Image 1: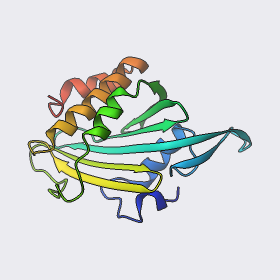
Image 2 (image 1 turned 45 degrees about the horizontal axis):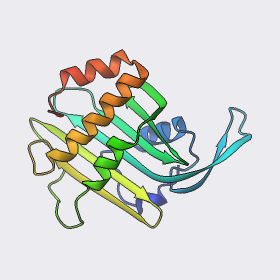
Image 3 (image 1 turned 135 degrees about the horizontal axis):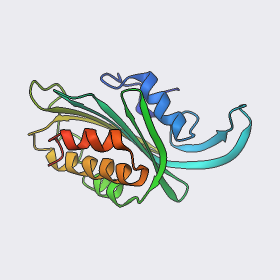
Image 4 (image 1 turned 135 degrees about the vertical axis):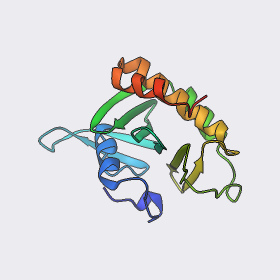
Length: 179
């Protein structure tokens, strides 16, 4: 996957291979907003879709396995995939309300910069890309950005309900990062 949509930024702590798995699960070629060609297992063109925006989140609790989430607004639907260890959940179609809430609450540039490393909490690394703009936000639980972690928790709970995924539900029940 080319990461030009992310402005050539360093992706740590987001692992590029995990990012590829999530983007591929959503059926997106390169994960950059714009026209995407969906291909079958043989690599043959199945359809063309428009990726309007994509959110990728890496969530790293101090005492739990990390989790990654990708949510794309594709054509007129919202599709999500979650990677918890080696378990890939998705793609699933979800209502876009939780994503819309997260995006509308996204802070203006220059109002953050706390970093993602935490000793006893949860580190969040979020990337949002849409045509013409991409941004990245890193913060820890217990910071002024906790309202965003609640939106991420709502997205993860929605995905767990839609997929009936016991691994994801168990992970969510063990974490205190989402209030």
